[in-house]
Length: 145
Image 1 (cartoon, rainbow, N blue to C red):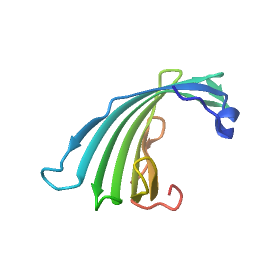
Image 2: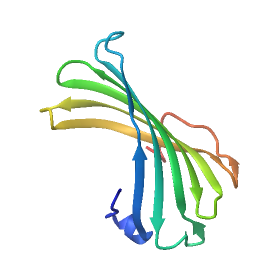
Image 3: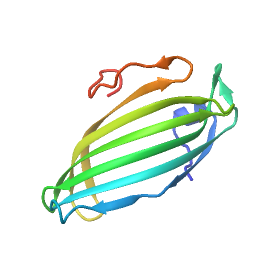
Image 4: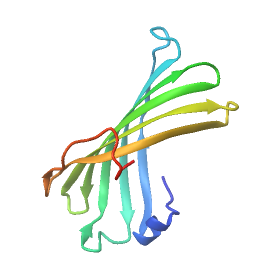
């Protein structure tokens, strides 16, 4: 369960979010030393004070599949890449759109509990049921990075 504390959540009257996820980790160390793959299906349900805001319907459900690929260069340094594919539905049961996001970066482990990451994320809506195809997904987009 997530407790919203951001200004955006407060402005949108978001009360809480239930997030269920089940990660599957595949250790590929026997194929390539230091390589790991994690696939995580996720389900979100949003609870807003209102079903609409400013003429638009709020998201009620979201299903996401996340694929994470990590490679440890040594005990301290690593690189990673992730892709997330998301579907959303609003409170009226209408399917909203598909969304894809890519994350890449490097990480440094200071200790077992402290790790720093530097990377970038890019996201794009690839289909909207009301407007049809939304164009192509670019690896870099000045609007979405």
